[in-house]
Length: 174
Image 1 (cartoon, rainbow, N blue to C red):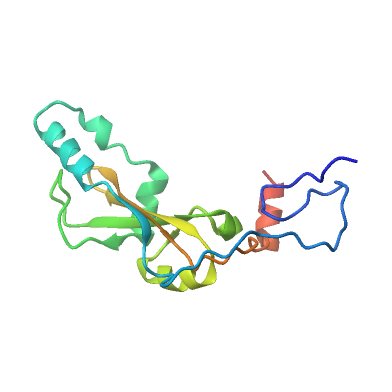
Image 2 (tube, rainbow, N blue to C red; image 1 turned 180 degrees about the vertical axis):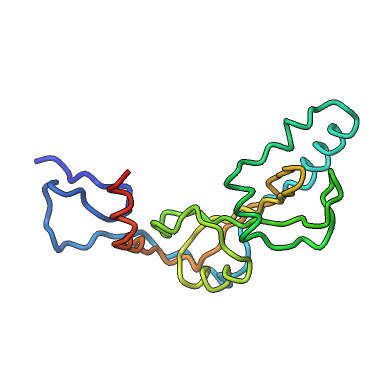
């Protein structure tokens, strides 16, 4: 008899696969985390940003290489972006924003969504581990740059939440 096939959601068995229906699978060991709201594994892209801006202003790069924000990123910046407090480094527009995205297996259908920075501490206590990406965006000149990434979470592995019924119906219509 072959081993049960596992789906993309950790710990769940694909329908029709052999296995005991009520059997709980181990999600892995708990990683001890002192402060779930403290960023772990931070990566700061400030030096790459500085080099890109220097190359841009010296004429070594085309504006289309950096000022090419995706339309969805521009909409996210317009409706969900948080003001930086300074002007755009390219066009000096004062409406310069940061957009924060969260990704992780434990987030389930909520992975890849835009979140406000104020929501992150609460999410860090609700989920074991997820990655945060902060992108700066200018809606005027379309400048965008990944500023930093880091990991948050309390270290307790969890199953992803179920996909809401309305989301399942929308996916079926595609």
